[in-house]
Length: 385
Image (cartoon, rainbow, N blue to C red; front, side):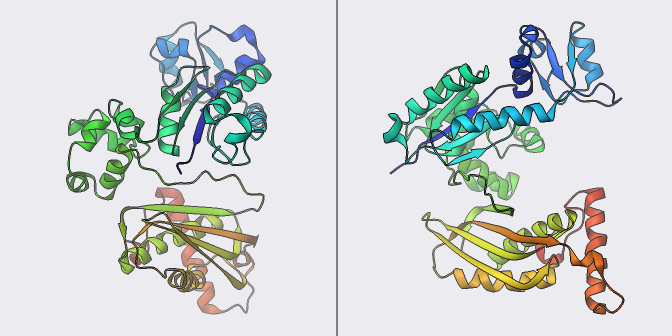
């Protein structure tokens, strides 16, 4: 049975929220930015501003030159947070499986609640109508069997409507669309795609995935999968338990143990670095595996005491990984989840702490500082590649 995933978003979310609160702003060219900064960037632009050539990420002083009547609004994060909470409150009426996105967007897995509300299309229509009537926000939506295609469909949907992609039509729906709609296409990838004359998604499916891998490395195989409309990531509601989750979908399904252990090492290293930046340590780890046949495996491990150090965690993570890796089927994705946080004890080293542990903490602190300054990939452990 195919899943039914609805993607719902409020286009130009900050602008839409400001206009819902101040109807006099409707019809005027607007941007959200912090004008008190000399290097301020446009965070959001109204349709009227976009018609004048203004785009998100543009320098504010350039935007003002393009549109003399432009009105600049200060960002109002508390207001936007309240609007997002109100939207989620509406969506939770139709399914408990709601995953919030960014800027007024969310995914809904309505597979288990369709019988209650008359089908996935009916849920999308009713949710849009209630948000419009109760919150004065105008949503658009997409409906498909996975998050990738539903999100692209939602971006193609006119306001107050929804675009439905039937099961089996994912590739034909995506084919005529621009490549930059695929999640794997960041700015540098888009530039390279243009250099190679890849403009439309169908052009990615017309070539061998091996050719894409030669041109883009592992990302090339991800591009090929996404161009086919493949996406196996679940809709994940936020948990009430504080946690940090990192996930990687392999560019190519693999049962090569060295490749899998290298990916695991990278996930653990990145997660612990983030935990240390928050001044925390952790005691519980959960690892989830997704096999190529879409079956999953899960295991958990606890330390005796909290730690944020890689030397303490990786051997435990590797042992847990090997414990749950019981099938010969290739692995498609790995996810790690850390829970049970406490204040980082490494920040309170005493005079008589273990000397080796003290040296490791000094090393990891130095590495974290380098990453904060020069980017997370500026320095890596050799094993992480």
